[in-house]
Image (cartoon, rainbow, N blue to C red):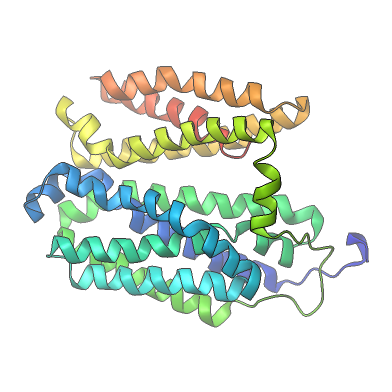
Length: 326
């Protein structure tokens, strides 16, 4: 059956919206300590490094759990796979809020949330391929990626406001309740597949695909460059408050710096990848993106003017995050 004769169901937007909400919630919980590192260290009586660990643990867990999570999604479907991620995000997010005064328990809750992350993020293309016709799949995948940035932006911008107006435990509890409600919404509204196929569904098993890709030199180069950019982004977002704080910037200003970096990334992801598609080149644009991060990174690291800091954050995000869709 060709894509032109396949029926596209309106319910696909419901599935996409609740899925995007789960993604955003998970990213929100990941980044929530980044803009308040100093305040959180004082609250828990631990080092700044211990607070950074609450975010960095996600990167380690993702590497360990990513392939098993993808296998579950391939074998049991997106409703089960993403459902696991949503439940882990919601339950451990709420527990983190209820046990917010104990650092060790918060760390354990963070690990639980981190385990759920690959179950959610690794299903983006699967949901797009199952629910959306060919002509809409790139857009659906892009919306899933946009939800990642949206969750990070909310976490960076809103967390300092909640902490300044209320407290760290209140912020964690609010995020936990919201995450649990989103998990329930996903379990209630999500469906495995539409009543009939919306078009040809590409079927690829994770392990088989990885075996083929790791024998391609070009892929290994792209993977290395991508991880450089991803590592830089994670490092800056995780330590944003510690990076700008010594120059006299407050936690709410640090949050806005991180948020503007994400907005810049969204703009860059909209502009740069289409240029790459038009010229049918990947590696030169990835290298360009990595080089373009240098002035932004220097500004974020050394700027003493708040407006220059914001501009640098936007430039850094525009080049750094644009390498992801490439």
